[in-house]
Length: 587
Image (cartoon, rainbow, N blue to C red; front, side, top):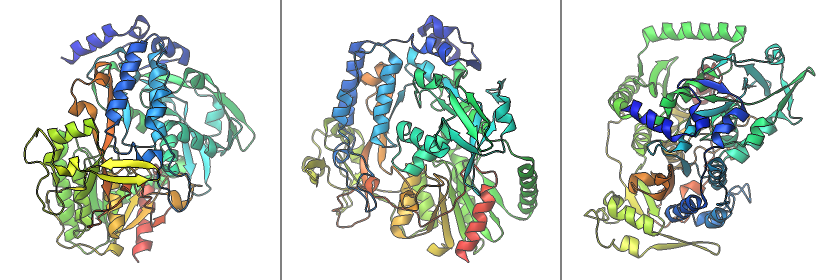
């Protein structure tokens, strides 16, 4: 079946694109853009897509608040003002270039700074634009930041996709020399600018963290950089005065990765692109690994089959690390069994608990709520939510959501039946919230309940739980982190991010709203017909005010970490550094 699909995709591509082989392949920017620029669109198609976006974005719960968002105490413009319809009207629908049109929409999405709002390619539609899922840009180096001297270094890549690449000898010779400038500017500022322009996250720390990992490698579907940008040489100058200019190249992934929502090849390539270690670091890491193996002989260690959650006890500290709250269906049983074993492990001793969240992507809230309840059983993890009044929102509430929302006063489900002719007063008699002169009309607050799961018998005090989060904690991870912060149930410590950034802009989590893919609701929507998909923030969440009269959703409340440590997310001995920090905090 997959072979037939790949053949269909191949026939749908232009001649320039079909010249690519099935496996990994390296191309020049100009060569790749011969393929990219051969994929054309029409004015009618573009207008249909823009009109479709306007229709479905009426259901985005933040459409109103974006026009005049409330600001935190430390800034007057932390949340940027934006009129969604006005920005969509600026997009040039007369262009015949699919890539140009797609790039304009992606830039619009970035400007909303909503990490749940996304626009991408529908891998089930088999349209020519799918080639963007397998084309990635790359540089012959990875960026490494030394946490001790706060300087930037470049580590070379010898291969990309298993293919050897040419690396300038200047890069090889200067791996241990700090970078002075990139294109004549402070190298950290270059990363900040890249993040601000191409990364759709609000927090400057989150922008930097994501830019740090995508400046030298990313799929064009994710960050569609222009041909002109990719053809512009990047000049590196080191502190010893030496310099070199390098250019981006293009890697084509196997066509089979088109068939996957998230290509494992991308994860593998990012893993391979991590900085190589110095001899001193290798020796230190080997000693650490030997010690951990000795400890594992004495201590219990549990990990899920997909390695997305694991735990162990070491040095009188219980350690829980969560890499994902969203296991694939085939791994759910292993995931839940592992968490259950971690509960038993933590109940078997009185040690404090260290929790680490790392680069969590799109998540299922059920597991983030479960982890929060495990750590703090007295937290209320039920969600108080409202949706923006619109035709699209109404259709969703009639179809399914009305059956999982509860009246907070009577505890009865909002809608007893699927597809009611008319929704109840909770929707037809909405609340009106004003942000200055902007009216925000939403359904009356409802509760989304969490189903009880196994909990700890020996819960710890808040001062015995230390939670570490990087700046990319959003979705389910953010729900958990913001919940712990709201209830004061743990000490929350930030790590990673911009090493020179301010602590007051390091949020415990971003986007904690409830999001949906349009195609999951409207199977034959106009966007899918043209080969695209859209995800929107459907329900805004509020803090647990039992008067149910909160006016500002959690998304626009800057919950800042309690403490911060300067350790990069990808540093080779991160776990050891964090564990030592935990000992200091809980002593």
